[in-house]
Image (cartoon, rainbow, N blue to C red; front, side, top):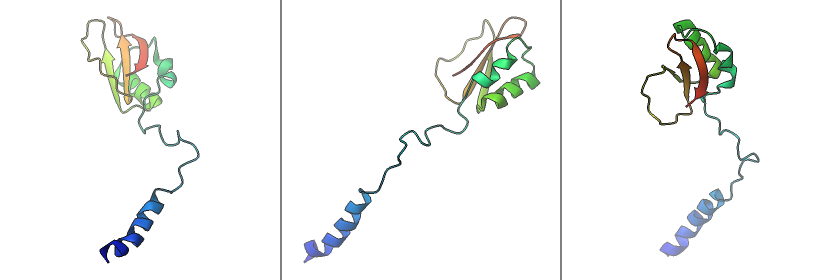
Length: 99
């Protein structure tokens, strides 16, 4: 008798596996705060002052930003939510990338 009482439960659970999947498999894969370096490229050539760094961060939609000098040691971990701003010895922005 226990086996028969479990049959309706198994039928309901197996229907859950038949649920439709989204038509676009890439829908929703972009995370909020994911870095986009292209909109921040306009800040190359400017001094890496607080206002400029903040504006570049906003333009890139990133959650974090790091300013990297010519002799700075940095971790090599890649973060999709981080903007990297490379500066020269005079703190002029020479490159903007994500990572």
